[in-house]
Amino acid sequence: MPQPPRSSPAAAPSPAVSRPTEAGPLQVAVLGSTGSVGSSTLEVIAASQGRFTPYLLAAHRSTKRLLEQAHACRPRYLVVVDPEAAAAIGADALPAGTRLAVGPEALNDLVQQPEVDRVVSAIVGAAGLSSTWAAVEAGKMVALANKETLVMAGPLVMRLAVQTGARILPVDSEHSAIHQALRAGTPAEVTRLVLTASGGPFRSHSRAALAEVTLAEALRHPTWSMGPKITIDSATMMNKALELIEARWLFGLPAEKLAVLVHPQSIVHSLVEFVDGSVLAQLSPPDMKLPIQYALSYPQRHPGPARRFDYTQSMRLDFEPPDPERFPAVRLGHEAAQRGGTCGAVLNAANEEAVRGFMAGELRFTDIADVCGRVLAEHAFQPEPSLDDVRRLDAWARQEVVKWACV
Image 1: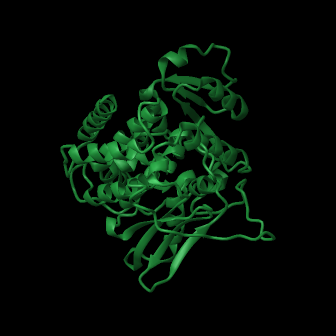
Image 2 (image 1 turned 120 degrees about the vertical axis):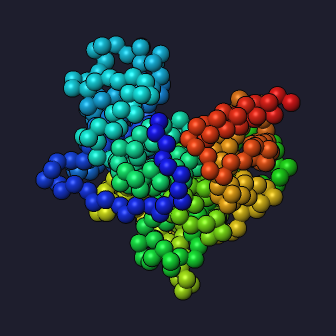
């Protein structure tokens, strides 16, 4: 994969305007279509009154669900990344007009096709970096739900986007909220970006109680419906750590201008404070279909299927700072955002492996952040890594977590 030249990270490029409606619906590639964000994306497309249509749907192994989606929306391509899973798909399983492609290289090739207007990057974890890179390399409009792409390789990806004219629009509800609020002022007028956090199901637990948390408890999120890995990240608040790093590169602001605030209702999705003391926030019920549609429709807004407020009911909004003793992941995120370099890639890889260990019963809930901090502190830091360096340290961090879990 080509490497961008080493230079100072550039600011995010100005967003592109959608093709005129007379040119037909925008062709959308949905990467990770069987996951929670991918499924919500298909709901948005179905409700778009013909503004969007799926060009391809991609999944790793979930072929049964993928085929159900294909018969419902008739994309031009289905991509199954795992060849073994793809081999089980019979020749008559595909709907008429849909072709099957297999493997990561096929996915990367297809997202670069000129017919593709927008790419929804919703593959979970480090596995989403390669296809997102391919889309940015081709100058696509990328609706980015895969935060790990910027956590691992933010300066490289943003630099590549400037070179190719690609546009990156955030799908994370927090970063989408910031993107919307930032339209009220210039970058020079911004004092602080504040990411809100639900606090997960354990925000009032003591440190001792957190050590006894079970997998079933960690998977019960009070406000959001998400996949298991992201749900556990929310419970440890590691999702905020990763989002801090993502915001550092996506919005081009230093770590000292980034903050986290616990907001259990998940109604205020983030805030932007300006130099005059004004604070702008984006509010909506917790529903991923809204930021997905915003990224697909930008710069326009259209009616959609997202939930709405019921203004006949009382509401309350509570805010509190996160407790660094009980949730040390937030501190790790600040550290990684401040140092940059290889810190994001190492923290992300360590967390993915630690979450896997927790789900397998090999680690306690509190071990997740503890082992991530240890691996981050012990890695061979590089301030200007290449993509190969990022991948090498990703593999190293995972091995270190496995060793730690075996002690």
